[in-house]
Length: 427
Image 1: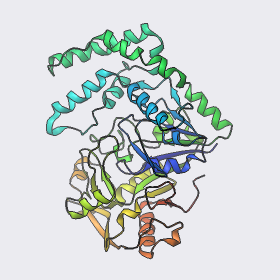
Image 2: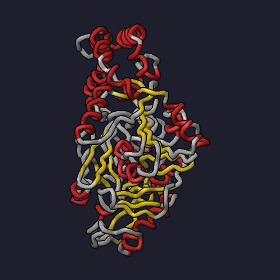
Image 3: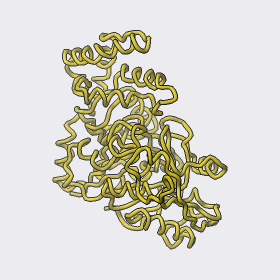
Image 4: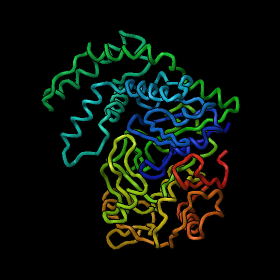
Protein backbone atom coordinates (compact mmCIF):
# COMPACT_ATOMS: atom_id res chain seq x y z
CA UNK A 1 0.00 0.00 0.00
CA UNK A 2 2.39 2.75 -1.19
CA UNK A 3 0.67 5.92 -0.01
CA UNK A 4 2.78 9.09 0.16
CA UNK A 5 2.07 12.54 1.55
CA UNK A 6 3.75 15.54 -0.06
CA UNK A 7 3.46 18.87 1.76
CA UNK A 8 5.02 22.27 2.28
CA UNK A 9 7.54 22.47 5.11
CA UNK A 10 7.60 26.29 5.36
CA UNK A 11 4.89 28.92 4.72
CA UNK A 12 3.79 27.51 1.37
CA UNK A 13 4.99 28.32 -2.16
CA UNK A 14 7.90 25.88 -1.77
CA UNK A 15 7.45 24.27 -5.18
CA UNK A 16 5.07 21.44 -4.35
CA UNK A 17 3.68 21.45 -7.88
CA UNK A 18 7.08 20.62 -9.35
CA UNK A 19 7.61 17.84 -6.82
CA UNK A 20 4.17 16.34 -7.43
CA UNK A 21 4.61 16.56 -11.17
CA UNK A 22 7.98 14.78 -10.90
CA UNK A 23 6.25 11.86 -9.21
CA UNK A 24 3.14 12.07 -11.38
CA UNK A 25 4.35 9.59 -13.96
CA UNK A 26 4.97 6.97 -11.27
CA UNK A 27 1.77 7.28 -9.24
CA UNK A 28 -1.78 6.21 -9.99
CA UNK A 29 -3.67 8.85 -7.99
CA UNK A 30 -2.79 12.40 -6.89
CA UNK A 31 -5.13 13.75 -4.22
CA UNK A 32 -5.66 17.28 -2.89
CA UNK A 33 -6.71 16.90 0.74
CA UNK A 34 -7.29 20.44 2.07
CA UNK A 35 -7.49 24.10 1.18
CA UNK A 36 -9.13 25.56 -1.88
CA UNK A 37 -8.29 27.99 -4.64
CA UNK A 38 -6.26 29.99 -2.14
CA UNK A 39 -3.43 27.58 -2.95
CA UNK A 40 -1.43 27.71 -6.15
CA UNK A 41 1.06 25.44 -7.88
CA UNK A 42 3.20 26.28 -10.90
CA UNK A 43 4.29 23.36 -13.06
CA UNK A 44 6.61 23.77 -16.06
CA UNK A 45 6.40 21.05 -18.72
CA UNK A 46 8.81 21.68 -21.59
CA UNK A 47 8.16 25.24 -22.67
CA UNK A 48 4.66 25.24 -21.18
CA UNK A 49 3.85 26.76 -17.79
CA UNK A 50 0.70 25.72 -15.95
CA UNK A 51 -0.70 27.63 -12.97
CA UNK A 52 -2.98 25.34 -10.97
CA UNK A 53 -5.11 26.64 -8.10
CA UNK A 54 -7.64 23.99 -7.16
CA UNK A 55 -6.75 20.99 -9.28
CA UNK A 56 -4.15 18.44 -8.15
CA UNK A 57 -0.88 18.68 -10.07
CA UNK A 58 -1.36 15.08 -11.22
CA UNK A 59 -3.92 16.33 -13.75
CA UNK A 60 -0.95 16.98 -16.06
CA UNK A 61 0.19 13.33 -15.97
CA UNK A 62 -1.80 11.27 -18.54
CA UNK A 63 -1.71 7.99 -16.58
CA UNK A 64 -2.71 9.54 -13.27
CA UNK A 65 -6.18 10.00 -11.74
CA UNK A 66 -6.50 13.41 -10.03
CA UNK A 67 -8.77 13.55 -6.98
CA UNK A 68 -10.22 16.43 -4.97
CA UNK A 69 -10.83 15.02 -1.50
CA UNK A 70 -13.51 15.75 1.09
CA UNK A 71 -11.19 18.09 3.02
CA UNK A 72 -10.99 20.59 0.14
CA UNK A 73 -13.38 23.53 -0.18
CA UNK A 74 -14.47 24.00 -3.77
CA UNK A 75 -15.54 27.09 -5.67
CA UNK A 76 -17.48 25.53 -8.57
CA UNK A 77 -16.92 28.47 -10.92
CA UNK A 78 -13.16 28.35 -10.33
CA UNK A 79 -13.02 24.59 -10.78
CA UNK A 80 -14.98 24.64 -14.04
CA UNK A 81 -12.93 27.57 -15.35
CA UNK A 82 -9.68 25.80 -14.53
CA UNK A 83 -10.87 22.61 -16.23
CA UNK A 84 -11.94 24.58 -19.30
CA UNK A 85 -8.57 26.33 -19.50
CA UNK A 86 -6.68 23.03 -19.42
CA UNK A 87 -8.99 21.46 -21.98
CA UNK A 88 -8.31 24.35 -24.34
CA UNK A 89 -4.59 23.60 -24.01
CA UNK A 90 -5.11 19.94 -24.88
CA UNK A 91 -4.95 18.50 -21.35
CA UNK A 92 -7.34 15.60 -20.72
CA UNK A 93 -9.28 16.35 -17.53
CA UNK A 94 -11.91 13.61 -17.85
CA UNK A 95 -10.39 11.41 -15.13
CA UNK A 96 -10.86 13.98 -12.36
CA UNK A 97 -12.77 12.74 -9.30
CA UNK A 98 -14.49 15.16 -6.90
CA UNK A 99 -15.63 14.09 -3.44
CA UNK A 100 -19.37 14.48 -2.90
CA UNK A 101 -18.51 15.38 0.71
CA UNK A 102 -16.32 18.36 -0.22
CA UNK A 103 -17.78 21.68 0.91
CA UNK A 104 -18.71 24.37 -1.59
CA UNK A 105 -17.55 27.97 -1.44
CA UNK A 106 -20.75 29.94 -1.93
CA UNK A 107 -21.03 33.53 -3.16
CA UNK A 108 -21.87 34.69 0.36
CA UNK A 109 -18.71 33.04 1.74
CA UNK A 110 -16.64 35.18 -0.63
CA UNK A 111 -18.55 38.32 0.34
CA UNK A 112 -18.09 37.66 4.07
CA UNK A 113 -14.37 37.00 3.58
CA UNK A 114 -13.77 40.29 1.78
CA UNK A 115 -15.81 42.56 4.03
CA UNK A 116 -14.42 41.00 7.20
CA UNK A 117 -10.83 41.48 6.06
CA UNK A 118 -11.49 45.13 5.19
CA UNK A 119 -13.20 45.66 8.55
CA UNK A 120 -10.13 44.34 10.41
CA UNK A 121 -7.94 47.06 8.89
CA UNK A 122 -4.38 46.87 10.21
CA UNK A 123 -5.30 43.71 12.12
CA UNK A 124 -6.15 41.85 8.92
CA UNK A 125 -4.89 38.28 8.46
CA UNK A 126 -3.92 38.68 4.82
CA UNK A 127 -6.42 36.18 3.39
CA UNK A 128 -6.83 35.73 -0.35
CA UNK A 129 -10.43 36.94 -0.12
CA UNK A 130 -11.70 33.81 -1.86
CA UNK A 131 -14.10 32.66 0.84
CA UNK A 132 -11.94 29.84 2.19
CA UNK A 133 -12.10 30.69 5.89
CA UNK A 134 -15.86 31.40 6.00
CA UNK A 135 -16.52 28.12 4.18
CA UNK A 136 -14.53 26.14 6.73
CA UNK A 137 -16.32 28.07 9.49
CA UNK A 138 -19.67 27.05 8.00
CA UNK A 139 -18.44 23.46 7.90
CA UNK A 140 -17.59 23.52 11.60
CA UNK A 141 -20.82 25.35 12.43
CA UNK A 142 -22.73 22.63 10.50
CA UNK A 143 -24.34 25.04 8.07
CA UNK A 144 -22.05 24.24 5.17
CA UNK A 145 -23.10 23.28 1.65
CA UNK A 146 -21.57 20.09 0.25
CA UNK A 147 -21.19 19.02 -3.37
CA UNK A 148 -23.81 16.30 -2.88
CA UNK A 149 -26.36 18.96 -1.82
CA UNK A 150 -26.46 20.27 -5.40
CA UNK A 151 -28.47 17.20 -6.32
CA UNK A 152 -31.33 17.77 -3.85
CA UNK A 153 -32.89 21.20 -4.36
CA UNK A 154 -34.99 20.97 -1.19
CA UNK A 155 -32.00 20.23 1.07
CA UNK A 156 -29.89 22.85 -0.72
CA UNK A 157 -32.53 25.54 -0.19
CA UNK A 158 -32.92 24.70 3.50
CA UNK A 159 -29.16 24.83 4.05
CA UNK A 160 -28.73 28.13 2.23
CA UNK A 161 -31.60 29.61 4.27
CA UNK A 162 -29.99 28.44 7.51
CA UNK A 163 -26.63 29.91 6.57
CA UNK A 164 -28.04 33.27 5.43
CA UNK A 165 -30.26 33.76 8.48
CA UNK A 166 -27.22 34.80 10.51
CA UNK A 167 -25.00 36.10 7.72
CA UNK A 168 -27.53 38.61 6.41
CA UNK A 169 -27.88 40.03 9.91
CA UNK A 170 -24.13 40.56 10.04
CA UNK A 171 -23.87 41.92 6.50
CA UNK A 172 -26.69 44.44 6.91
CA UNK A 173 -26.29 45.55 10.51
CA UNK A 174 -22.53 45.35 11.04
CA UNK A 175 -21.07 45.91 7.58
CA UNK A 176 -23.88 48.01 6.07
CA UNK A 177 -24.13 45.69 3.08
CA UNK A 178 -27.19 44.54 1.17
CA UNK A 179 -28.79 41.26 2.23
CA UNK A 180 -28.19 38.27 -0.04
CA UNK A 181 -31.27 36.56 -1.51
CA UNK A 182 -31.65 32.83 -0.85
CA UNK A 183 -33.27 32.14 -4.23
CA UNK A 184 -30.44 33.84 -6.09
CA UNK A 185 -27.79 31.72 -4.37
CA UNK A 186 -29.74 28.48 -4.85
CA UNK A 187 -30.24 29.21 -8.54
CA UNK A 188 -26.55 29.88 -9.06
CA UNK A 189 -25.45 26.73 -7.23
CA UNK A 190 -27.96 24.51 -9.05
CA UNK A 191 -26.51 25.82 -12.30
CA UNK A 192 -23.27 23.97 -11.53
CA UNK A 193 -24.86 20.59 -10.78
CA UNK A 194 -24.94 19.08 -14.28
CA UNK A 195 -21.48 20.38 -15.15
CA UNK A 196 -19.92 18.85 -12.03
CA UNK A 197 -21.88 15.59 -12.12
CA UNK A 198 -19.41 13.62 -14.33
CA UNK A 199 -16.69 14.12 -11.72
CA UNK A 200 -18.55 13.50 -8.45
CA UNK A 201 -17.64 10.23 -6.71
CA UNK A 202 -17.29 8.42 -3.39
CA UNK A 203 -13.59 9.19 -3.26
CA UNK A 204 -13.09 7.58 0.17
CA UNK A 205 -14.10 4.24 -1.31
CA UNK A 206 -12.15 4.78 -4.52
CA UNK A 207 -8.88 5.60 -2.73
CA UNK A 208 -9.08 2.80 -0.18
CA UNK A 209 -9.85 0.26 -2.91
CA UNK A 210 -6.92 1.61 -4.92
CA UNK A 211 -4.55 1.08 -2.00
CA UNK A 212 -5.89 -2.44 -1.47
CA UNK A 213 -4.99 -3.09 -5.12
CA UNK A 214 -1.43 -1.84 -4.50
CA UNK A 215 -1.93 1.33 -6.51
CA UNK A 216 0.36 4.27 -5.68
CA UNK A 217 -1.51 7.20 -4.13
CA UNK A 218 0.09 10.60 -3.56
CA UNK A 219 -1.59 13.06 -1.18
CA UNK A 220 -0.79 16.66 -2.10
CA UNK A 221 -1.10 19.43 0.46
CA UNK A 222 -1.68 23.09 -0.28
CA UNK A 223 -0.03 25.99 1.61
CA UNK A 224 2.56 24.84 4.18
CA UNK A 225 3.23 23.59 7.71
CA UNK A 226 3.55 27.05 9.26
CA UNK A 227 0.12 27.97 7.86
CA UNK A 228 -1.63 25.02 9.54
CA UNK A 229 -4.63 26.12 11.62
CA UNK A 230 -3.39 24.08 14.61
CA UNK A 231 0.38 24.00 14.17
CA UNK A 232 1.12 27.20 12.27
CA UNK A 233 1.81 30.81 13.26
CA UNK A 234 -1.74 31.39 14.50
CA UNK A 235 -3.72 33.55 13.79
CA UNK A 236 -1.79 34.26 10.59
CA UNK A 237 -2.64 30.87 9.14
CA UNK A 238 -5.00 29.18 6.71
CA UNK A 239 -8.26 27.57 7.84
CA UNK A 240 -7.33 23.92 7.32
CA UNK A 241 -4.60 21.37 8.11
CA UNK A 242 -1.85 21.27 5.46
CA UNK A 243 0.21 19.08 7.81
CA UNK A 244 0.42 15.31 7.33
CA UNK A 245 -2.51 14.54 9.63
CA UNK A 246 -4.78 16.49 7.31
CA UNK A 247 -4.15 13.93 4.58
CA UNK A 248 -6.08 11.35 6.62
CA UNK A 249 -9.04 13.50 7.66
CA UNK A 250 -9.19 15.16 4.24
CA UNK A 251 -9.42 11.90 2.28
CA UNK A 252 -10.74 9.17 4.56
CA UNK A 253 -7.55 7.12 4.28
CA UNK A 254 -6.19 5.90 7.61
CA UNK A 255 -2.69 6.76 8.89
CA UNK A 256 -1.50 3.13 8.86
CA UNK A 257 -1.70 3.20 5.07
CA UNK A 258 0.81 6.05 4.67
CA UNK A 259 4.37 4.92 4.03
CA UNK A 260 6.30 8.17 3.43
CA UNK A 261 5.85 11.85 4.22
CA UNK A 262 7.84 14.20 1.98
CA UNK A 263 8.41 17.82 2.96
CA UNK A 264 9.12 20.44 0.31
CA UNK A 265 11.72 23.00 1.35
CA UNK A 266 12.78 26.06 -0.59
CA UNK A 267 16.54 26.71 -0.39
CA UNK A 268 15.62 30.04 1.22
CA UNK A 269 12.33 31.12 2.83
CA UNK A 270 9.29 33.03 1.58
CA UNK A 271 5.93 34.00 2.96
CA UNK A 272 2.76 35.65 1.59
CA UNK A 273 0.41 37.59 3.83
CA UNK A 274 0.79 38.93 7.35
CA UNK A 275 2.50 37.36 10.35
CA UNK A 276 5.93 36.86 11.91
CA UNK A 277 8.88 35.95 9.68
CA UNK A 278 12.21 36.01 11.57
CA UNK A 279 14.55 35.81 8.56
CA UNK A 280 12.68 38.30 6.38
CA UNK A 281 14.98 40.62 4.40
CA UNK A 282 14.27 44.26 3.62
CA UNK A 283 17.50 44.94 1.71
CA UNK A 284 19.05 44.26 -1.68
CA UNK A 285 19.45 40.55 -0.89
CA UNK A 286 15.73 40.23 -0.26
CA UNK A 287 14.94 42.01 -3.51
CA UNK A 288 17.43 39.80 -5.39
CA UNK A 289 15.82 36.63 -4.03
CA UNK A 290 12.41 37.94 -5.05
CA UNK A 291 13.57 38.87 -8.56
CA UNK A 292 15.72 35.83 -9.34
CA UNK A 293 13.26 33.41 -7.77
CA UNK A 294 10.23 34.95 -9.48
CA UNK A 295 8.60 35.25 -6.07
CA UNK A 296 5.10 36.32 -6.89
CA UNK A 297 2.06 34.40 -5.62
CA UNK A 298 0.50 32.03 -8.17
CA UNK A 299 -3.00 32.67 -6.83
CA UNK A 300 -2.77 36.17 -5.34
CA UNK A 301 -0.25 37.84 -7.64
CA UNK A 302 1.25 39.44 -4.54
CA UNK A 303 5.02 39.75 -4.09
CA UNK A 304 6.27 37.19 -1.61
CA UNK A 305 8.24 38.27 1.43
CA UNK A 306 11.73 36.77 1.14
CA UNK A 307 14.39 35.73 3.64
CA UNK A 308 17.23 33.32 4.27
CA UNK A 309 16.73 29.64 5.03
CA UNK A 310 15.35 29.01 8.52
CA UNK A 311 16.51 25.67 9.94
CA UNK A 312 14.41 26.15 13.08
CA UNK A 313 11.12 25.95 11.18
CA UNK A 314 12.50 23.11 9.05
CA UNK A 315 13.15 21.07 12.21
CA UNK A 316 9.67 21.93 13.44
CA UNK A 317 8.15 20.72 10.17
CA UNK A 318 10.06 17.45 10.48
CA UNK A 319 8.67 16.92 13.96
CA UNK A 320 4.98 17.78 13.48
CA UNK A 321 4.68 15.94 10.15
CA UNK A 322 6.88 12.94 10.87
CA UNK A 323 8.82 13.73 7.69
CA UNK A 324 10.80 10.89 6.12
CA UNK A 325 12.35 12.96 3.28
CA UNK A 326 12.87 16.47 1.97
CA UNK A 327 12.67 17.78 -1.58
CA UNK A 328 14.85 20.93 -1.70
CA UNK A 329 13.73 23.39 -4.40
CA UNK A 330 15.19 26.49 -6.05
CA UNK A 331 18.80 25.84 -5.11
CA UNK A 332 19.77 27.56 -8.37
CA UNK A 333 18.37 30.88 -7.12
CA UNK A 334 21.22 31.13 -4.59
CA UNK A 335 23.93 31.01 -7.26
CA UNK A 336 26.11 34.11 -7.12
CA UNK A 337 26.26 34.86 -3.40
CA UNK A 338 29.76 34.78 -1.93
CA UNK A 339 28.34 33.75 1.45
CA UNK A 340 24.87 32.51 2.31
CA UNK A 341 23.44 33.06 5.80
CA UNK A 342 21.38 30.24 7.33
CA UNK A 343 19.29 30.76 10.46
CA UNK A 344 20.31 28.07 12.96
CA UNK A 345 18.60 29.47 16.08
CA UNK A 346 16.75 32.50 17.44
CA UNK A 347 17.66 35.10 20.01
CA UNK A 348 14.70 35.93 22.24
CA UNK A 349 15.19 38.41 25.08
CA UNK A 350 18.92 37.63 25.14
CA UNK A 351 18.40 33.84 25.14
CA UNK A 352 19.47 31.48 22.36
CA UNK A 353 16.53 29.27 21.34
CA UNK A 354 17.08 26.40 18.89
CA UNK A 355 13.49 25.15 18.57
CA UNK A 356 10.35 26.96 17.50
CA UNK A 357 9.01 28.85 20.53
CA UNK A 358 5.77 27.58 21.99
CA UNK A 359 4.71 31.13 22.82
CA UNK A 360 3.33 33.31 20.04
CA UNK A 361 4.77 36.36 21.79
CA UNK A 362 8.26 34.84 21.81
CA UNK A 363 8.06 34.00 18.13
CA UNK A 364 7.03 37.54 17.27
CA UNK A 365 10.17 38.80 19.04
CA UNK A 366 12.55 36.14 17.68
CA UNK A 367 15.70 37.43 15.99
CA UNK A 368 17.63 35.08 13.69
CA UNK A 369 21.03 33.72 14.68
CA UNK A 370 22.93 33.12 11.45
CA UNK A 371 25.69 30.75 10.41
CA UNK A 372 27.50 31.78 7.23
CA UNK A 373 28.02 29.11 4.56
CA UNK A 374 30.28 29.58 1.52
CA UNK A 375 28.43 30.25 -1.73
CA UNK A 376 29.09 29.35 -5.35
CA UNK A 377 29.07 31.14 -8.70
CA UNK A 378 28.84 28.20 -11.12
CA UNK A 379 25.64 27.55 -13.12
CA UNK A 380 23.98 24.47 -11.58
CA UNK A 381 20.90 24.25 -13.81
CA UNK A 382 22.41 21.47 -15.94
CA UNK A 383 23.48 19.29 -12.99
CA UNK A 384 22.10 15.75 -13.25
CA UNK A 385 23.63 14.24 -10.13
CA UNK A 386 24.69 15.45 -6.71
CA UNK A 387 28.36 15.13 -7.70
CA UNK A 388 27.75 17.57 -10.58
CA UNK A 389 27.09 20.35 -8.10
CA UNK A 390 29.93 22.67 -7.04
CA UNK A 391 31.53 21.64 -3.74
CA UNK A 392 30.08 24.63 -1.92
CA UNK A 393 26.60 23.85 -3.22
CA UNK A 394 27.03 20.28 -2.04
CA UNK A 395 28.13 21.60 1.34
CA UNK A 396 25.09 23.87 1.55
CA UNK A 397 22.72 20.96 0.87
CA UNK A 398 24.46 18.71 3.39
CA UNK A 399 24.35 21.44 6.04
CA UNK A 400 20.62 22.02 5.50
CA UNK A 401 19.98 18.28 5.67
CA UNK A 402 21.83 17.97 8.98
CA UNK A 403 20.08 20.99 10.47
CA UNK A 404 16.60 19.98 9.30
CA UNK A 405 16.48 16.45 10.64
CA UNK A 406 15.54 14.40 7.55
CA UNK A 407 17.42 13.32 4.41
CA UNK A 408 17.21 15.49 1.28
CA UNK A 409 16.23 13.02 -1.43
CA UNK A 410 15.78 15.41 -4.38
CA UNK A 411 17.02 18.87 -5.36
CA UNK A 412 15.47 21.35 -7.77
CA UNK A 413 18.10 23.19 -9.83
CA UNK A 414 15.71 24.97 -12.19
CA UNK A 415 12.00 25.39 -12.91
CA UNK A 416 11.75 22.72 -15.61
CA UNK A 417 10.40 19.22 -15.09
CA UNK A 418 13.82 17.75 -15.97
CA UNK A 419 15.84 20.19 -13.86
CA UNK A 420 15.88 17.98 -10.79
CA UNK A 421 18.55 15.89 -9.11
CA UNK A 422 17.11 12.73 -7.60
CA UNK A 423 19.34 11.37 -4.83
CA UNK A 424 17.00 8.74 -3.38
CA UNK A 425 13.79 7.46 -4.97
CA UNK A 426 10.57 8.43 -3.19
CA UNK A 427 8.91 5.20 -4.34
